[in-house]
Length: 462
Image (cartoon, rainbow, N blue to C red; front, side, top):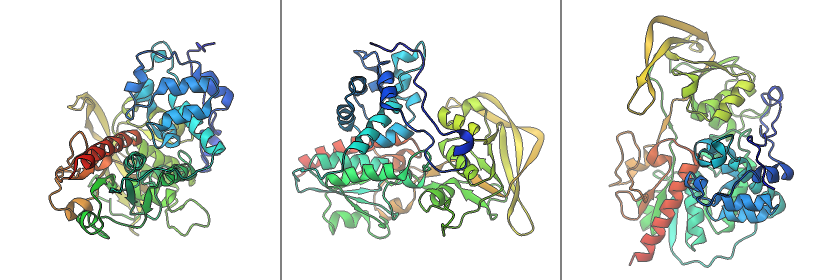
C-alpha cells in the first residue's frame, strides 16, 4: 500500500550537543523499515521527472520500487549502472535542488527522500557484500585520469567497465580528492570513500599516489613516453581565493582548503596527531557555502566559539539547507549582512579580531542574486584568534602552465566543449577544473560525459 504521508521519514541523527564534540557521522541512516516506508511514498510517475533532475540520470523510480519491495541489493545494482559512487552521493549531493526538486510529491508536501534512500541502499550493499575483482576483458587501450576526485573516479569507472586500462594519478598520499581532503568525517566517513575506490580497483583501475602531474610527469609525457592514448583532467579547483584585505597575512589566517585538509586528510583533530593546527578559542569563518559550513563545524568540534560572517541574508546562503540547520543546531553563530574589511592583529603578529562593515541588499545582479553595498559608518569588530577564508577556489595553474596548447579561461578554468574535449586532441577535462568549484554530482556527470566521448574518440582513432 502506498504511503501518502506529506512528510519524509526523518533522518536519525546524533544529538547536536553530543555530535558538536566528536567527528563521528552526524546522520545515522535509515533502518530497513524506515527505508521501505519512505520508498512507498514514491508514485512511480511514468514521466520520471526526478531522473531529469539527476546529473548522472539514475533510474530513480526503478531503484525506489525495489526498495519498497525489500529488494535492497537489486536497488543497488540499478543505481550502479549510472553512478560509480552511490554511498558518497547519498550523503553529500544537494538532492533538494536536483532530483528531489522535481519530485511530484513535493508539490503538496515534502518530496520523496531520494538521497536518504540512495545512501541506505549503498550502505546495505557495502555491509553485506565483499569487494571482488571483476572479470572485464581489456581492449588494450590505455587512458590516464588526472585526479581521484569525483569527476576522475566517475570517468575511470565508466572507462574501466568498457575494457580500457585506466590509471588514475593522484597528487596526495590518499585517493579521493575533495572527498577525503575537503569533506569532514562527520559528513562523509573516509571508510565510505575508500570502499568506493576499492570497488573501482576491482574493475581494474590502477591508482598512482604522490604523483603531481605537471611536475612529476607532464601530460605530454603521459601520451608519448607512457603510452596513454587519451587523458582526462579532473584535477579539481584547489587553489584558494582570498579577499585581499589588510591583515590576511597574519598568523592564524587559513584558507578553508588548508584548514580542512589538515583536519580531514591529516587527522589534525586527533589528540595524538603531529599535524599542526590552531585550535582557536574564537574563530571567524568568512563565506556562506558548504565549505564554510564544513570549516565552521570542524572548528566548533575543536572547542571554539564559531562565527560565520556572510555579506548577504540567510535566505541567500548558497550552502545546503540541511548543512545550515546542522550548523545552527551545533551552536555556530551567524552574522548576516556583514563583510570583513580588515583582519586585526596583536603585537606578536597573531589574529586578534576582524573588522566588519554592515551591508544592505539591493536589486538582483546579473547572476540573479541581490547586490550588496556597505552601510556608511557601520564598522564593528568581532573578536577572534583564528580566521578561515572560505570565499571560493580556482583550478591549480600547474597543469595549464606545463601543457602546451591547452586553452584556459582568464580565471584558470580549462576550456572544454560539451563533451569535455579541450583544445588538445585526445585530452578531455571536466568537473571543477573546468567549471570552478561546484557539486560532487555535477563533477561526476562531467566525468561520465567525458568517458563516453573518450570511448567514441578511441574507437574511431586509427
